[in-house]
Structure formats: structure tokens, C-alpha cells
Image (cartoon, rainbow over all chains, first blue to last red):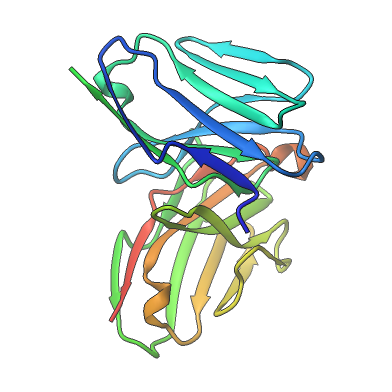
Length: 107
Length: 115
């Protein structure tokens, strides 16, 4: 059962563009929403996380927007760079992961 | 820096073989996890352990077992490997408690092919 739905599956943007990755969850008891970044050949690494008591969190070029009523949250990458090319996973609570989005940032 | 290491990066096994995947972490973390990662399905939790000799089933435990005899080591066992267990296996660890489980540190993964 997919408790966290993530879209799109893949995304290609030009350098400097703002890719947006979306996630939706079902269980209103979830209280922690992290994003992980995974480069080829590596395990996922925590990128940024948010709790449902705030609507936005920014760390550097990465921003999470959170809509509690819609049970949705999204990752925005400002001024994207080729080095941001990776697979991104959202998660809800602790061990519920989305299916992943493969991001390619073209030079 | 937290380091989570997995015994093999690539493994090829035959159907019916018993397979051991080993994971070691060096941060004295209480919590350890095993996931499998498949395209289009993301990471799915197989088992986790919150203490030595303790284990809890995750979402897809069928066909797997685990062992945690020492705090730093968490083993995943495929009792009789099948082709549908071909996957990338990821181990993770995290500090203790419910809040600790929120930040997981992953190993590089073991890509298992079952023929």
C-alpha cells in the first residue's frame, strides 16, 4: 500500500530552473515530512524536513511547502544546478517513502 | 560523520540459496533498518530493530528474517532466495527513540541479483 504518493517519476530542467516535486499522504497522524537525496551508487541522505505546524521551510536553495489541509507537500529547488541531478524521495512520518523522482538538470 | 557500511555492493545468488546481507554502523545507534528499493516503488521497510536482539516487522517481511546480536550489526537473511527478491537492499541506522528515528543514515546499498 502506497501511503505516500510522489510525482513526477522523472523531471528534466535546464540549469537555473526551479524543479518542483510533489507528494501527497493519507494518514493525518503523520507528523514529520523529510526529503532525501540519493546520488547514483549511494544511499539516500536527509536533505530537508518539515513538521506540520509550519507551512514552509527553506534551507539554502531547497524549500519545502506544506499544505496540511490538502495533505500535500512539495520540494522546490531554486536556481537548480547540474550537481542537483539525483533521485529525490519524500517521506511521511519515519519509514513511509514515496516512489522517488529522478531529477536531471541540464547544463 | 556517521558511517553505515554494507558487506557487499553487488551479489549474485541462485534461487533457493540462503543469503546473508550484513550491515554495520559506527555511531552507537540503537535503531537499525532494512529497506528494499525498487523502481517505481521507492523504499519499502522490511524489518527494523530498536535494540540488541529486538526486531519488528516492517511492511514487507515475508521471505526475510533478521538478526541483531550486537548493537552495531544488523543482518538481513533471505532463507531461500527467490527471483522476486532481486533488488537493491539498503540498511539505515538512527539515534534512539521516536524522534531519533526521524533522521536515518543510509549505507550505500547492496544490489542483489537472484538467478
